[in-house]
Image (cartoon, rainbow, N blue to C red; front, side, top):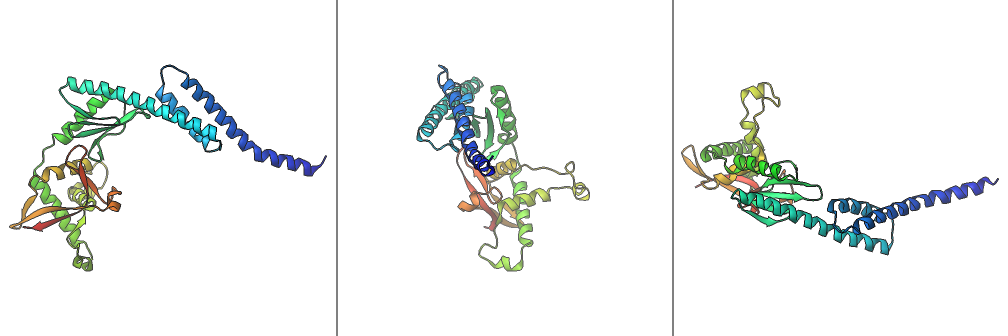
Length: 289
C-alpha cells in the first residue's frame, strides 16, 4: 500500500469534510424552513429559530439560490413577528384602556404616560424604560406581569416627590467637591467650572452614605440611589433650578453631550422632556445669577 496515496486521500477528505457538513446543515435548515413555510398559520417564533439556523448555514455556503431563499424566508419571518407583536400590543392596549389609561406608539415601542415599553417579540420579553433608563429587567410577555411592573414603576418614578431645593443642594455640593479635587492647572481652563454629570451623580451617592457605611462598607450598609431616580429628580428640579448658597443664588446648568459622549452611559445621561423626547447631557455646573 502506498503511504503517500493514503495521505493524499486523507488530505482530500479533510478538506472536503467541512464543506460536506456545511451543505448538510444547510439542507437540514432548508427542510425545516420549508415545513414551517407550508403551514397555513405562521408560527413566528419557530420561524425565528429556523431563520437563525439558515443564516448560520449561509455563512458557510456560498450559493445565490440558497441566499435568495434565506432572504425570502427572513422577510416572511419578520412579517410573522410583526403580526405577533401587533396582536400582543392590541391586547395590552385593550387592558390599559379598560383601566382608563391610553397606550400610544406602535410595536416594538409603546408609550403609557411617561413610561416606555420596548417589546422584543422574538425573545418573548418586554422592558419598561424612563427615558433611556431601564426600570425593569426583561419581562416575559405576560400582560398581567407587564401591567403590574408598570404600576410599580409609575409609583416609584412618576409619583415620586422630591424636595427640589434639598436635591439641588446635594448636587451643588457634589459639583463643588469634584471641583475641589481637581488639579490646580485644570481650574484655569475654559471648562473649569464644569464637571461630568455622571461623576457628579456618583459623588452625590457617596456623599449620601452614612458613617456606618464608611466604618464598615458593605452591601447591607450602602444607601442606594438608583440612576433612574436621579434622572427623575433632575427632571423635577428643572422646574425650579435655582438654589441659594451662602446668600448667593446659583442656577443649575447642564451641558449638552457631544456625539461621542452620548454614545457612552459613563459619560452622559439622557434627561427626558417627554416619553420619547429629551437630550443627552454630559456636564453640570452652577452659575451665580
